[in-house]
Structures are given as structure tokens and as C-alpha cells.
Amino acid sequence: MIQTIRAAGSFWLLRVFGSTIGRKLVMAVTGLGLCGFLIMHLAGNLLLYVGAEEYNHYADTLHAQAILLTIAEIGLLILFVGHIVLAFTTDRENSAARPVGYAMKQTKQPPSGMAAPASSIMMATGIVVLLFLLLHLADFRFSALGIRKHDGDDHFTKAVNILRDPLSAGVYIVGSLVLGYHVLHGFQSAFQTLGFNHPKYTPIIKFLSGLFAATVALGFGSFPLWAWAIQK
Image (spheres, rainbow, N blue to C red):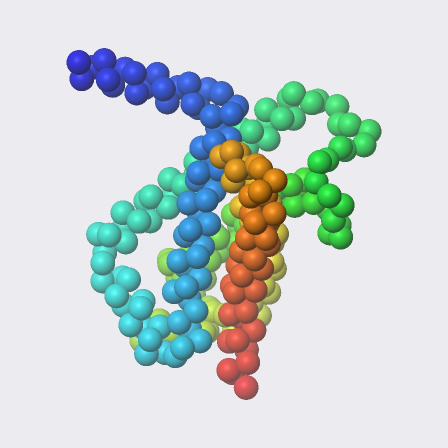
């Protein structure tokens, strides 16, 4: 009986990942999971505005839960890798299905004032976001760059020193803006993939998508500007 259940489960997973629709559904779920992470991460970082004591307490509490933090990081890594692999697979399938580009791209989306719709450059913005996140991990999690940091500094001081560095500040601002542009389409597209594509819900989802994108871009992008402001 147990072997039958396991076989059925394995068959179901193969069917999900073996179909384009199944992969898109999983990509939508992983994308929304990453959006949830962005909200929690931004909420924690906003304590920088409250003060050193509050931010240090938050960081110390977070790092004190070593086992839970490790489990959360592994889960987050699975979400990231799964989302990236599925994105590349889907893009490759779309390219293979249409080897010759259309003379004029057709879209059901209304005209936008942007230079290009977010949906048309998702892979490009996704790659930029990945590089931005790798730099962020190298800077804050693994301390790979060693930018004006010392072992005796507290978490607040280390964060401010990183954000004040001109190179890091520029990368963080650009990366935050690209991240916002990426989730502008990704957030809305995920809900549409999951079936929330209805005249009653679409305007609400579009509004929430724009609000979320602006919050992410302005929220993360504001930290380097704040770090430079308090330096004066």
C-alpha cells in the first residue's frame, strides 16, 4: 500500500514537471514564496530606520536561532534554484516553439509608458536580480567583500558601512529598481497562472502588483541613500 502511494506520488510529480502548465504553476508558487521573503526581509531591514539598538536586537535574535535560520536558508535556496531553473526551462521552450521572432509582437496588455513591458524582459531583469542577490549575500551574510568592516563592529555599524560604500550603494540602488521592475510583472503573472484572471480580480491584482513593486524598489533602494544622509 505504501509503495503504491509512493509510486502514485512520484508519477504525479513527473506529470507536473513534465508539462509546461505544471512547470508554470510551480514557478508561480515559488515566485510568490520569494515575494513573501522579500516582504519579511524588508520589514526586518526597516529597523535600520528605528535605531542601532533595535536593529542589533533583531539581528542578534535572528542569528541566535542557528538551526531554524539554517533550515529557512535551505528552504529559500530551494525556492530560488527551483524558480530560476523553471524560468530558464520555460524561456527555452518558448524560444524553441517560436524559433523566428514575430515581425510585430502582439500583446493583450494595454499600452504602457515604460520603454518595454516588464513581461518582455523578465529573463534579463531576473539575471540582474540574481547577481544583485549574490552580491547582497556576499556582503551581509558571508562578509566576502570586507568593505570598511571590522570584527568588533555591531550589525548596525557593519550595515551602514556597507551601504555607504559608493560601489555597493550604486549596485544596491540599481538592483532594487530592477527588482521592483521584475516583480511588477511577476507578482501579477503568478496570480494569473494560478487562475485569478477575472475582470473582477484583475484590476485589484494589478494595483497590488504596482504597490508591491514600488514598495520593494523604494524600500530597498532607500537604504544606501539613508546611510549617506546620516553620515553628514
